[in-house]
Image 1 (cartoon, one colour):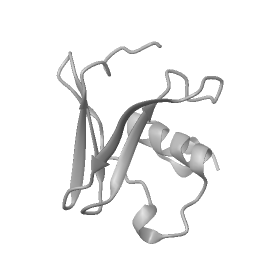
Image 2 (image 1 turned 30 degrees about the vertical axis):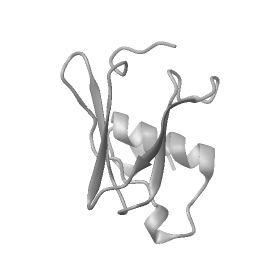
Image 3 (image 1 turned 60 degrees about the horizontal axis):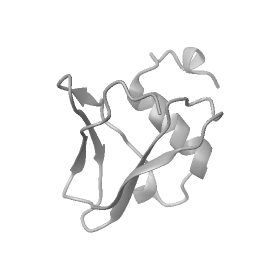
Length: 98
């Protein structure tokens, strides 16, 4: 079902969530569902925040093209989940075109 059929605006968070589903498929564990909050930018850094599980290890990847034409590049590994949400500040996340 398309985003427009769902009546939702295409936001960076929804595009990243969709890209994650394309890459890894539907989760079978309710704790594995990615719920990415709206990314924030201060003009130099991009902060990505998601709902997380304490002690779980997360990694972040980026792609300049979510159509699948380009591979994702890992930008962070072993990000330890905090209570409720975890954030990662990407100092190269604003305007990246790699």
